[in-house]
Length: 49
Image (cartoon, rainbow, N blue to C red; front, side):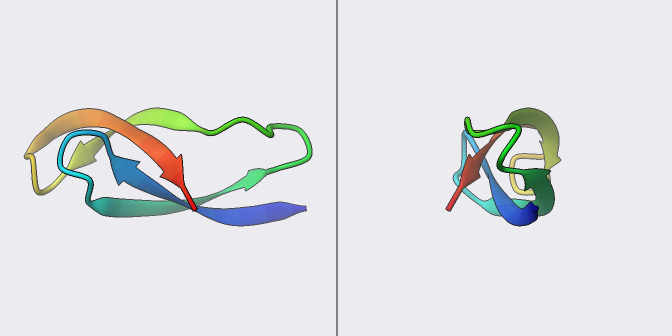
Protein backbone atom coordinates (compact mmCIF):
# COMPACT_ATOMS: atom_id res chain seq x y z
CA UNK A 1 0.00 0.00 0.00
CA UNK A 2 1.37 3.39 -0.98
CA UNK A 3 1.33 6.21 1.56
CA UNK A 4 1.74 9.96 1.12
CA UNK A 5 4.96 11.40 2.55
CA UNK A 6 6.29 14.96 2.85
CA UNK A 7 9.82 16.02 1.88
CA UNK A 8 11.61 18.72 3.89
CA UNK A 9 14.61 20.79 2.77
CA UNK A 10 17.79 19.91 4.67
CA UNK A 11 19.01 23.53 4.81
CA UNK A 12 16.03 25.84 5.38
CA UNK A 13 13.62 23.18 6.78
CA UNK A 14 10.75 24.17 4.45
CA UNK A 15 8.34 21.38 3.57
CA UNK A 16 8.25 21.74 -0.21
CA UNK A 17 7.18 18.44 -1.79
CA UNK A 18 4.76 15.57 -1.26
CA UNK A 19 5.10 12.16 -2.88
CA UNK A 20 4.10 8.54 -2.30
CA UNK A 21 6.10 5.45 -1.42
CA UNK A 22 5.48 1.81 -0.64
CA UNK A 23 6.25 1.45 3.08
CA UNK A 24 6.29 -2.36 2.98
CA UNK A 25 9.18 -2.45 0.48
CA UNK A 26 11.06 0.67 1.66
CA UNK A 27 10.78 1.13 5.41
CA UNK A 28 13.75 3.52 5.77
CA UNK A 29 13.40 7.27 5.28
CA UNK A 30 13.67 8.60 1.75
CA UNK A 31 16.21 11.27 0.73
CA UNK A 32 16.53 12.92 -2.69
CA UNK A 33 18.02 16.08 -4.17
CA UNK A 34 15.28 18.52 -5.16
CA UNK A 35 15.06 22.21 -6.02
CA UNK A 36 14.11 24.41 -3.05
CA UNK A 37 12.41 27.68 -3.98
CA UNK A 38 13.34 29.33 -0.67
CA UNK A 39 17.07 28.49 -1.01
CA UNK A 40 16.95 28.90 -4.82
CA UNK A 41 19.21 25.86 -5.36
CA UNK A 42 19.19 22.05 -5.35
CA UNK A 43 19.41 20.70 -1.81
CA UNK A 44 18.88 17.28 -0.17
CA UNK A 45 15.27 16.76 0.90
CA UNK A 46 14.43 14.19 3.59
CA UNK A 47 11.20 12.45 4.47
CA UNK A 48 9.36 13.79 7.53
CA UNK A 49 6.18 12.68 9.28
